[in-house]
Image 1 (tube, each protein chain N blue to C red):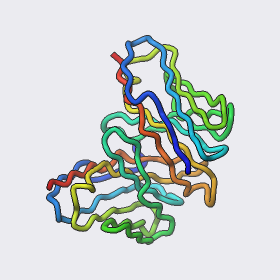
Image 2: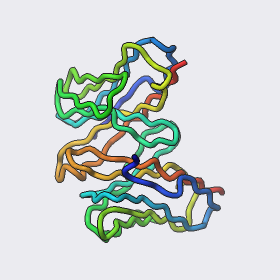
Image 3: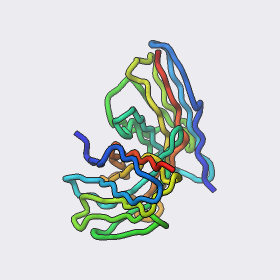
Length: 116
Length: 110
């Protein structure tokens, strides 16, 4: 069975510090990988998605970047955190089995980031 | 601009009551998914609806996709405390990217 791991679960970082959040998927090959941010009252905002190693698409301009060094590893980074980067970050995967548009997302348990 | 509007944003009901929440858009979607999210966890898929007018049932939960594939509703019969959570709808826009609504926060009081 497929599993997705995301860590850390919680993180408190000062403004201006770097960030690295990691996500790994097991039990599947060549998944689509996503990073979402969920801020209170704003729903899920897609930040980045990747269809393969080294292939990253950015949905919104921001202080963050993403990388996919391995097939089942997705990393979210920042060189200098801003207060506005606080939120709940969710990694997710899906595949193209069947009809692509109907592929459900499988989410990790998220990282609660507080920038102080 | 929010592509999917969910209403009501917050709903509190007594155990045993029925409730309906809505997900509306001016855009047409090829499919629509409903997820439930509990505090501190990621959303979990409940159902995918694909055909206009489609109705799907998951135990006490009934999902309906609008005829024009622009909106959807979720009806819960005889709600239980375990139904408490944030219900998120997500529409497929193409390129396998989903647009999420802000969610319907449902609280079922024992």
